Length: 131
Image (cartoon, rainbow, N blue to C red; front, top):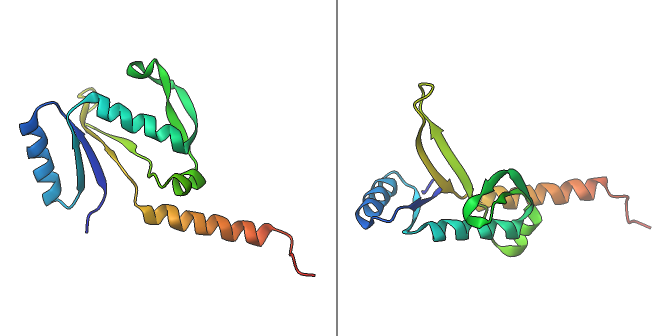
């Protein structure tokens, strides 16, 4: 069973295929794109399911707009669109820098369960409608 989705961006086809092959072997669901524009499209899509933008993390290629922030559970379900989460892996030694990065999608099950829990909480908190 696949663990999570990974988006790999590189303009060299051989590298995309090699990285995809290795991640597939490890059980990941892999999407490969060959351009930064495709990666930016993922950021634009996130705006459809978030509540705002964080100007502290501006994206120059998007006119310095802030990164989409505040995933709205209801919008995820309504738009049928999973969020993409930007991940980064820092080297264990300070000052060496980043050794890996990518975009992943959390599992749908987490959002379905969260929506059910929210609905149950609202039902429990609401005044009884019984006459």
